[in-house]
Length: 226
Image (cartoon, rainbow, N blue to C red; front, side, top):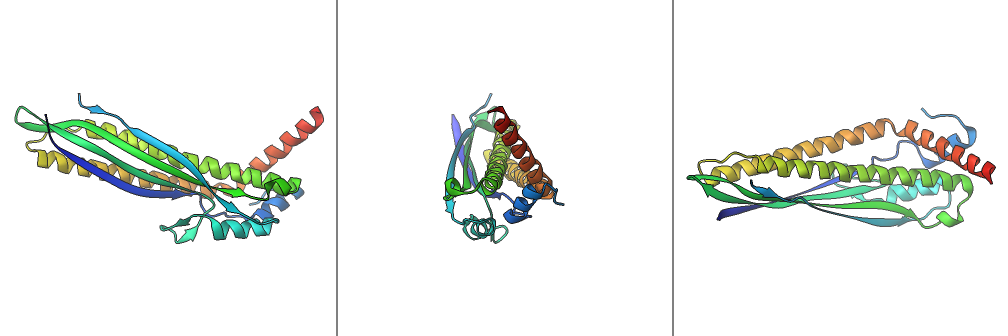
C-alpha cells in the first residue's frame, strides 16, 4: 500500500529569440537577392496554441508591432515574437518493501502553451511583404514547437529517472531523492532550452535568407507550371 505521496510543479518559459534582422532588411534581401550576414508511470502531456494579434502595413511597422505586442519574458525583461510556457508537475507515491521504502508509482505531467503572432493585415499585404511574413511566421512556429518537444523529452526522462530510483531505508530519504532528481532534470531541461535558443539566434540570418530563397523559388516553379 502507498505510504505517502509527493506532488511537485515547476513553471518554465522559453521563447523565440528577439529578431536579429528587421523585416525590412529581410525584404530588401529578398528583392535584391543578396544574403545578409515495477513501479508504474504515465507521462501526461497537454499542448495548446494561442495567438496575439499585431497590426502594421509595412515591414517597419511589423517590426514595431512584434517588439511592442509579443509576449513578455521575465528572464530577459523584453518582448519576443513568440513564446512557449511550460509547466512540469506530477505525483509520486511510495510503498514499503522488506522494511525499505520505494517509489510505487510516478506520474509526470507537462503542460505547454505556445504563443504565436497573427498578422491581421495578411490578406491585404503585397506579394513580397506577405512572403517575408509567411516565412518568418512559419519559422517562429517551428521554433516554439521545438521548445515544446524539448520539454516533452525531459518530462519522459524525469519519469524514467523517478521510476529507476532504488529503495531507501525510509520514505523520508526516498522523498528527498525524488526532489533531487526532479530538480536535476528540470535544470537539464532549462540548459537544453537555452542551448537551443543560442544556436537558433546564431543561425537566424542565414536561416531566414535560405527560407526566403526557397519559398521564392517554389513560387516561381508553381507559376511556370500553370
